[in-house]
Amino acid sequence: MSDERVPVWRQDFPLTSAGEDEVTRREFVRYLVVASGGFAAGNVGVALWSSLRSVNEGEPRPIVALADVPEGTAHLFHYPTRADPAILVHLPGGELRAFSQKCTHLGCVVYYAAERGEMQCPCHEGHFDAETGAVLAGPPQRPLGRIDIEVRGDTVWALGAHSEGI
Image 1: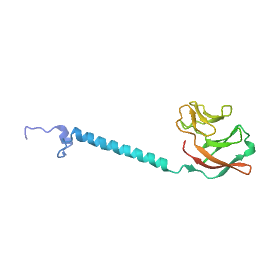
Image 2: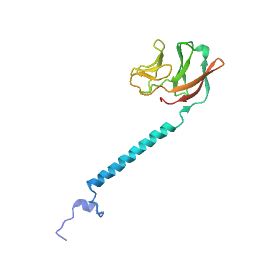
Image 3: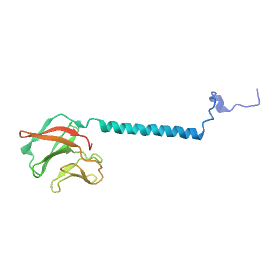
Image 4: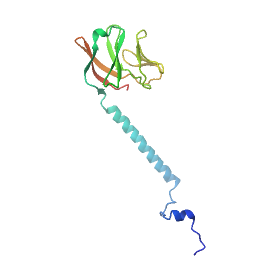
């Protein structure tokens, strides 16, 4: 037996690789930069994909009789699916607007405040324009998702949901 003793860890891991001690700090940083660039490119790709996907969802379907929603009131419904709360607003002057009822901040349910002409989110005090769905105040950064509507005969129909705010 030789006087040179083999370390215990070498007995457990007897394999070696030529040049395993030759990865310099500069090479390691280069690998980190390449990996970071790959992640950044992936994020840009996901952002482009989400902005290019179809924004109009849902099939046309009746919501409510126009007579059941007097001016200055709102009607709650679900569109495009049963899991998507929505709100139809009959503005003073006769205009109709429909939006997703989910606040674009954290998804709380918004309601129509007729006296202010706004959609309000009670969770974090978000305020949206009842005519356009645009953010007026509070933490939301995006407008409410818009739902296209039209009156057919005496019935209000939903035609499609635009997920710009969702």
